[in-house]
Image (cartoon, rainbow, N blue to C red; front, side, top):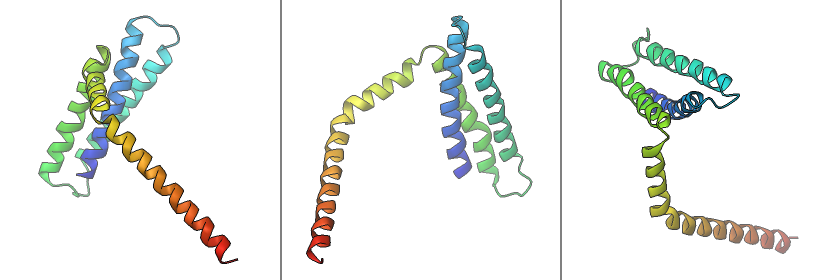
Length: 132
């Protein structure tokens, strides 16, 4: 299960970056060839990693995990690559929705955590000077 999660995250990020590089490569933006071919190489490494985990000799994965490794990370890579190639509309809309929906909550929690850290540091300083 851990292999599926880590390969899915790696495949998602790599697919977005590789799709964006391919999008820029098709637009003929200068100095993008190195980036495009570099991320194409990393995509081949990703598929080699998927295949090596799928065909592991030590039999640490059961059949369901093997099928999951073979299907889930490459399909996430393909989705993020196609979305990045088309301009990142679906992923960008989801991120904007998430930011607009939960941005205020995260801001409040951030302020509370910062406030707690400041209070704890002040208590430490007062204790330090009290016991001198």
